[in-house]
Image 1 (cartoon, rainbow, N blue to C red):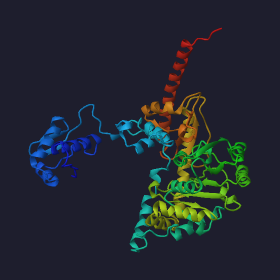
Image 2: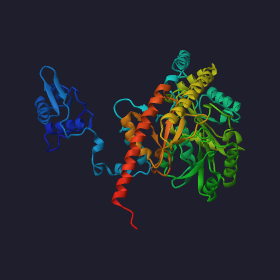
Image 3: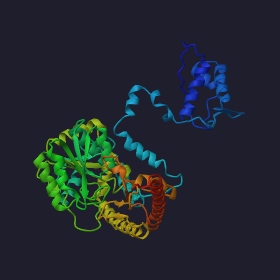
Image 4: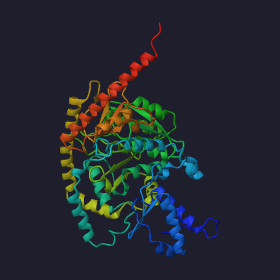
Length: 507
């Protein structure tokens, strides 16, 4: 145990020792039932007398912070009532000035909102429709373990090194081949492997944007992109959506000013709405981008998860040359912990992104890339994809049936043709954020719509991930959600009645 002691201070050494241990206990660094060093041992480590350490322990015992057990030693006690172990409870003014500035950051509030909502979840495990990933019960753990083991058996020093900074060449070539089969022109040298698609977004944002720039996004859009762009101190302008995706009139309004520096879009199985941008509008997006000189960042996080309808071309497939930066990921389909994504970029931007990648994390895990390459090339990925689509389609249908059976009149949604999510509009003027704690009490949680709008205002929407649970759990979760909505409606009606009583209409 390292305890800083100032031997030139007028404060006695035993009080310095006691003060240090006191702060460690209150901050939670020394947890209850932690055994402290014996007085003789700590005295030797600190270069003090045993009596000095014994006096420090005695002070803390008198405060109820330590407890001595005969023949066993000295232990951290449970804190008395009123004392907090969380250092975050310190007053804002107690932190260094540079830390106080972070309290006014423009992008932290959205993250705090999510944290505060999650803290409302009961300790018992709720049925959670809030997840942003696929079903863990479908993750191909055994098959991927075989691929990983095979790579490790090669005993190749290259496997354990950084590898190519742009990504494992074989994996880049495989990705280019897969995309080519989908009509997306991509050469191996245009593929950059990233540590998940979130890093791909971050690299593009850091390269193209400066503080104060304007970024156009769908409204609503992926909450991780909102937080990322806010962290770059740029201005977000939301483009409203209808049943066909982004409204082109509003998109042109956003581009016409000449201030937009980037369009970020999820045209296929949009997060959170599940919508697909129509084929006609995809071409219009590219025409507008060329007319107003605005680069397009296409996030295709779940394009492979199609259950119904015809596949639509990616924006990158329609790209006349260098206008679209395309990002994808394997995390949603395989395992989030894999953290392997990619981007495809044509032209001078590629070298800029590669340079930024090198300064960020040098390279994505070479071991994971080689294991993924081995997994894909033996055909297991396509087998897994077909199975996942079959299971997810059934779970989507189950959620839609449960919404129809349990949710009250006025609840609206659209059935997505693919992806992970159903976007639900609550009846009347119900707030999804206000509904959240009531739903948590019922044992079900969701992602409130306010997390997905760039203009953080309360919303009557919620996002539900239908891929995680089997049918019986989905039905029970929706039944609980409907019970919470019924409670919220009663509360809302009671508030309206009180308002009418307190503010009667006057003639």
